[in-house]
Amino acid sequence: DTAVSQTPKYLVTQMGNDKSIKCEQNLGHDTMYWYKQDSKKFLKIMFSYNNKELIINETVPNRFSPKSPDKAHLNLHINSLELGDSAVYFCASSQDRDSSYNEQFFGPGTRLTVL
Amino acid sequence: AQSVTQLGSHVSVSEGALVLLRCNYSSSVPPYLFWYVQYPNQGLQLLLKYTTGATLVKGINGFEAEFKKSETSFHLTKPSAHMSDAAEYFCAVTRPLSGGYNKLIFGAGTRLAVHP
Image (cartoon, rainbow over all chains, first blue to last red; front, side):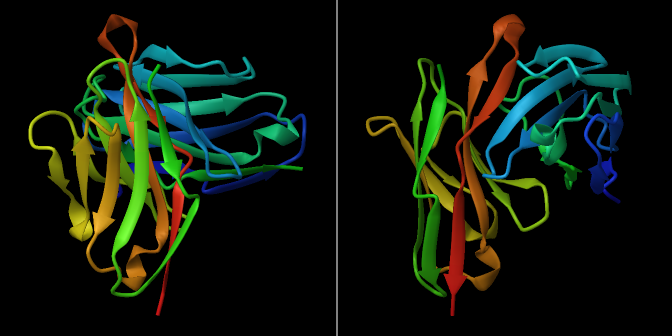
């Protein structure tokens, strides 16, 4: 069974469109994250939720909106897609909010290509 | 603020040779340090972590890392490289946030190539 799953794995879309990426974890973890990995493999956190509460909200355009319907799911909605949004987006989860001790488990990634 | 620097964006070794991937950190508080591996077209997987205690940390797949406070380093080593070790390796440090939260700060990554 996949611990952290993301859909879709690949997403190709036109500039200006709105798209969503879904993430689910079956590990019973309390905290979930969204990361963006650019073409140079640089990995940066975007958001983190703990028990459906937003706890980390990095400086990202407000076109990006995370939604957590329950603690097992964290979706990412992107409005008005731009070329610069092309990247691989990773979802991750950890047992609780303290990433000092807790391993983060990553999903397989969603490769977003904006044309 | 906490940060990590990985020296060498690409490292190439022969199969059976020593693997050494370098990571230096900057932290104003005692650091918690991690090494993650990313195989092609996959997510990241934890190799090992240092929080407190023993400075030599052993991880999965025969990797280990040593925390050296005096050198602010956390280099990753493996005595004998396998072809299956070819991947991207990321060093990371936690950065404390208000409210008792933390976030991971990743280095730029080192791509390890293993040739026969």
